[in-house]
Amino acid sequence: MADSLAALLHRAEAVLARVEALLPTPLAAPDWQASAAFRYRRRRGLPVLEPVRHLAAIRLADIKEVEPQKQRLLRNTEQFVQGRQANNVLLTGARGTGKSSLIKACLNEFAPQGLRLIEVDKADLVDLPDLVDLVAEAPERFIIYCDDLSFDEGEPGYKALKSILDGSIAAASDNVLIYATSNRRHLLPEQMRDNLAAKVDENGELHPGEAIEEKVSLSERFGLWVSFYPFSQDEYLAIVAQWLRHFGLDAATIAAARQPALIWALERGSRSGRVAWQFARDLAGRGALDGSVPAPSSAAVAPEGLDHV
Image (cartoon, rainbow, N blue to C red):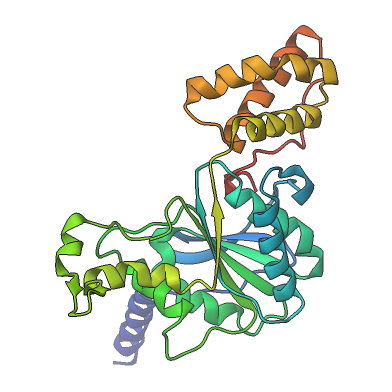
């Protein structure tokens, strides 16, 4: 009888061990000193925070022709790092104009003062409340970063982000801000049918319908909007020249690159900072191949995208 009971208990313990392995495990805090940037991911259904081993070396001085936007974001981030009041930020506008570059540069500027960045994909925003709770007691200051943010109708991450920004019964701790980039200011798609519910009162005042109000409400919860615009030809060429200098090309080569740089932009259909960097990298690479210019530095980094951090 005793042997049968022991065998039964052993089998029960084995079953419990298997069940426990299937249960969700709580998100564990990493070593915040392992890196200045982390990625929130799900691995086999389990949430993890992975340190970014190789941070992009881009600095604020590398980013040209967006000085007003740079100053606004720098000021807000400095206030936050110093423990003063600061706003969640939505950076919107033309692609390739430096939105994510500015965020990376601010991270490099303030990481020695305890700033940390956590990149979260749109699909994982439903876990945002758990992530905010995890970092609430940490001494560091955290920017939760969402790149190229926009939502389709009914996506669950929309409500989670909206509540964290402003609206949840539980306020986010004062050591967390959300920085997001998007090519459009209103983060939900706007349909022509949404305008059918708009009303005009007896005084002629236009009142948007509930659908429109809902679609603009998320972006309005970001306290600071930083807008970016397409570059003029002169601004584009100035950025090209800056990146060519970064790659070690001399003044004569930079002057001669003006027309090829314009053709490059025409072929791409865009005059952006990203296109300027791509042209400069191509020209420097071809020059290094034939020995006319030095090889590009291994520290050179792309001006957009946290895939490079």
